View (cartoon, rainbow, N blue to C red):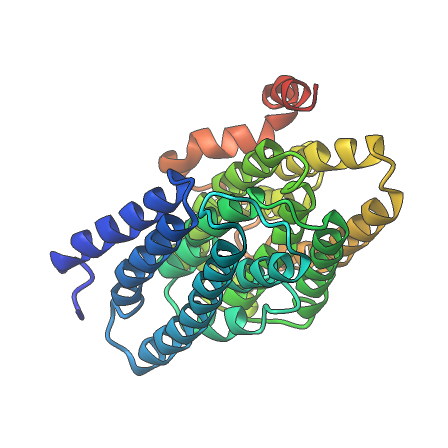
Length: 337
């Protein structure tokens, strides 16, 4: 497995994708669990793509956490079946509701059960990090949207997730850790609307993926894994990376701001002012390390006034990011209205 183009990796990628699609296309809780297990079996070999000891340790941690949450998931599903004699029923029992909710939050890496996510992502390659923070969250988010649990519980979890992700990233120098805690903070924003309007959560998730693809690729190929490398010479246009970082921070008029706007407007309309204030506080805290990264690129970089050739692979995504106020606003009004 030392060769990252090893032919069997295509098989593992296919198994991972089929597992997620099986969970997304099913209305049966047992089939969703089977899809999650299939996804896990395809993803674990990909985590060991370079055959390093740290990757093996991280993959074992990931396997233990996911296996524990899957065991709780199938146990809760069987208990629900014993009460209602149906695999398709919603959860009416408060205890079972809470157990299923905590199981899915553990799979997603949300607070207060986020402890396992940073400990494994700092040992991963950027490609695997991207998959953990995006693709691996699709199926649990979909399953979470099908539940009819107590909205107050999920609101408290979303507030804790946003604040924890923002606070824990403040003193980090490892870029993989910063991106991981940033993803935890963004997960809190997605969880706020998962019970009320899952289409807005999907919209936020897609925008996060659009921002993360060029950002992680540019950081991994040009910068390295630590913040001090932002001050070194590089062959890319730093303003592109700055625009992507500020977009993750939610600075207007970039794409990340439009994503947060889609969440804020319904929350204010529903008079959830306390939740809105806490979410904005978490964003304000995370703005500190986003601006720190941006200032290191803009002020301390030797290549500030040099404009090398643009990365043509991501020109369309970067244009969407910068021009989102004019491109995405009609879509936002359609979603909300």
